[in-house]
Image (cartoon, rainbow, N blue to C red; front, side, top):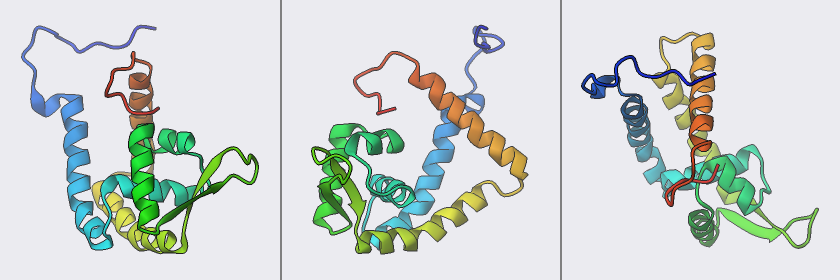
Length: 162
């Protein structure tokens, strides 16, 4: 089945109805509002994504973590190095494969993540206020589908990890 197309490609673009703009606007607003809590914890938004992903499933390899966080592997490697230097994560040999390195939260990383999680959840609740649980589930599903559609496009130099 062919992908649906905008109704009229010759019509002027309306920024306030342009999906990439709407998604970005919402994302920037969420990130801006969460940044105060992140600054208080001494971490950046990308650090939070790494810590939250590890809290969800600890002991991931770098490539798995890159996929989970949508952070390019070389960028993620630098982030993990900084988090390790700050005592928030550790890198150890994987217990299942001694050749692989598993990234784990330290006790300090767990504390930081546990402290920030309620703020993240409260912000999400504020963002979806007035939506039903079904609408929230549908919104998340649609955003996953959009991301999947974009992941199918040819990669560019700036394309993040899937």
